[in-house]
Length: 212
Length: 212
DNA sequence: GCACGTTTCATACTATCGTATTACATGGGT
DNA sequence: ACCCATGTAATACGATAGTATGAAACGTGC
Image 1 (spheres, rainbow over the protein chains, first blue to last red):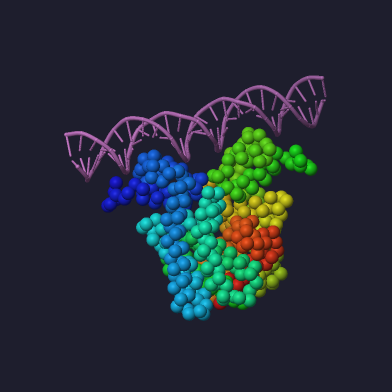
Image 2: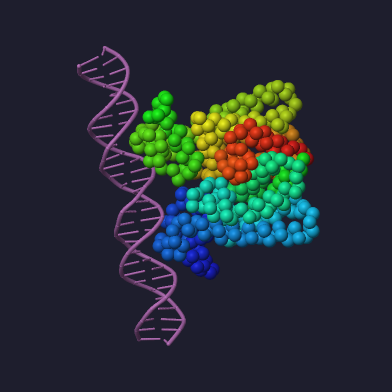
């Protein structure tokens, strides 16, 4: 249509579905909405991606795998550079948070919707997603948990895990509601300044996870 | 059936629907599931509660209105007691958080599901709910925002609002995932100790919203 | 004990869902 | 020029969704 370059059907479906899933959830989105938004025939999604669940899982995986790989790679590099001493807290948080905020900032490629969808998929438990999500996050949570733990070794495990849960919750909520942050604050907070939001989140997380 | 006392049909539908909406979301729940779980005829829900949207809204309102009324009442009392000086931060947070955690703790009356559902309904935006939720939260957010603000008057509004957003996000996430906290932490964090969870949340929120 | 307002029931109706099927277009390789 | 693989299109199909309907059951006045 008006597009300068016609993307592959397959890709157009992924982009359209991503936005709709992010906005309306899995059950709230129909394949007809998706194919209509992608300007594609209804049968295309089944032909290219199998059934609806496969499509959803493919969308999440496509975004999440590179992010978690990058996290693990950057953590390994940071630990190597630290030569045995703990990696600074703000560096750890930055490594965890940055890929998601940057994804959100990439509006042209649907990053806003992707980030929202990731936040959503982690909160609302879809039965067919749990095993994938568990497998996907187990390594990253385990390795970062250890690294973070070194900054509060005296803290009882229970307290540490609660704090971690609060930080994760704040992060997911930020991702899920960033797009209406401007409206919710009567224009005071911008919703398109990924760098400012990230900086504030890191500051927040460091304060929460810091020792005392 | 096995129940010691047979509740009204109307009430049974509300309880069953609450649990299912909390678990599977609005679109993921069918009226047939609800009536089956409530041991009630399919037509009962339409007869007593109108359509599906009305049922959902009624469930949320029934839980949320008393909570927000109690919050405003307790805030007014605390401000009266403080005689012009700022109400302590931990008191403010406690007033906001306590009703939700106590709701969660009231497992016998479906409080667990209700708390989860409230958390969920605030994150996933259902079109027919937005105006109700906005009206419901406007007063409480405005009044508590002012009260909290007195503890960090020098902080730029933007920073303050971001911190508030993080705290709210942590709270909603805690409500939405408390029920699987034990599993997520390999048994380290209990999911049935409302008091301990609340204490940790208050500590967390005070630290985040405190001045520096 | 019977009439009447209220609630419960079985079931019908229409729309729309995910998925399947079948025919049609297209465009390189020989 | 023809073929065949690959993608696209129109449309059918069974299941199930929310909602509507009308009859049966119930209970409480007189």
